[in-house]
Image (cartoon, rainbow, N blue to C red):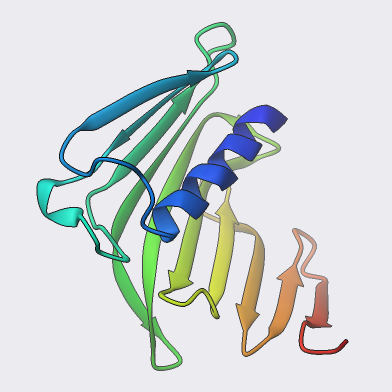
Length: 148
């Protein structure tokens, strides 16, 4: 499953950067045993938050799959963030879903993972150069990314 996590992070980065390829069609490619399909609406080209774009990764040998869809925008602390939802099948490490929000310049990022009952498992936020991680036990760790 760790290979799928790596591919998920690469795909999210590509979508966030607007580099998901030809936005007018569905693109499918295979990396090792994982098949990846990216579909973008015709009008998504050059948008930083191409709502309706979907990204699917599956491993036919293991049955593991992930699907991410950019579902819209959300305003947090006065900043508009693009919002994607990742569905994971089968549930891995009790994580069934991840919400990923990012600002256009990526200065604000929020990752929230949920279990099958939509309870928050963990959350990672980067806001104003400060990373805050809240784990499944509610413990909070804070890192100032501006310190050298």
